[in-house]
Image (tube, rainbow, N blue to C red; front, side):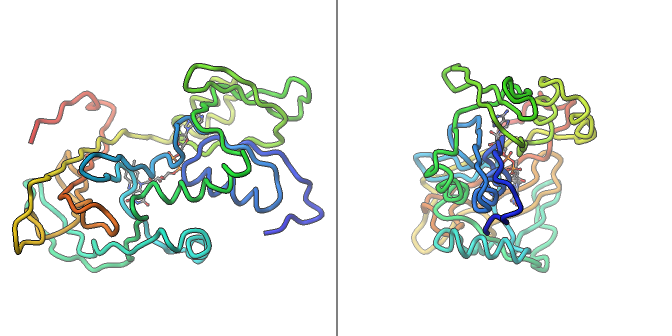
Length: 277
Ligand SMILES: Cc1cc2nc3c(=O)[nH]c(=O)nc-3n(C[C@H](O)[C@H](O)[C@H](O)COP(=O)(O)OP(=O)(O)OC[C@H]3O[C@@H](n4cnc5c(N)ncnc54)[C@H](O)[C@@H]3O)c2cc1C
């Protein structure tokens, strides 16, 4: 994508290097603008996250993605054709309150796609051109947005590194927040930008617990898997929303592993302890 001669080259700050921030920053960079991305975590990816354990990887956030938009197809084909594989979780089961299968194989609408060898590889790949241009600041939390001290038409960001080191990055024409709504709202309120924060007050976000289970001894000659003969299930249990056999995803380590994601926890019960299985 080339920048039109009529569009001036602008300085953009993007806060958040999840999929949204990375896609936005890359698009701006390819359009010829100057972009700096600030990410609080030491790795890019946000909620497309992977936990690496001695038994193999667990995708702790997004489990898979669908590809419904031609532009997304093109983005994957051009940036990560070697990283994306189809996951045959096609028969996603639905479990009742007691864990019994109530729907065996609901009709499949979209294919499930995953990154190999784990989900975090896709945002890592998308971050590479930004890192190559020294445009990605990892481990750098934006703590305050303010008018630029020298050029008030512009913006500056106050940041804090993982070691507590503080910096000011100035000279941005535009600041893009690509963070969850609740975090965007807090940042805007701290930055004394209440009118921008107002629209986000209506967005309700709930935390979600992820349980990672590994069964290194669960193998028997002649049996492909122990346990359920399905690989993914949505659950109507009031605490469990999703179960997936990590080891069934392509390119993963063979040790039997399950990721269990809790139903969204309301504010009232975020302190509820889950009984051990
Ligand atoms: C448990 C779970 C399961 C999911 N399963 C699926 C699925 O199967 N399929 C699917 O398509 N989607 C799934 N999703 C949703 C998907 O993961 C998200 O919609 C998507 O990853 C959000 O991307 P994002 O870039 O908007 O935000 P995020 O990924 O949240 O990225 C925001 C980034 O901003 C950073 N940040 C926040 N505040 C600051 C700050 N002040 N300064 C600097 N950086 C900051 C954060 O560290 C984070 O990296 C799931 C989500 C969860 C939580």
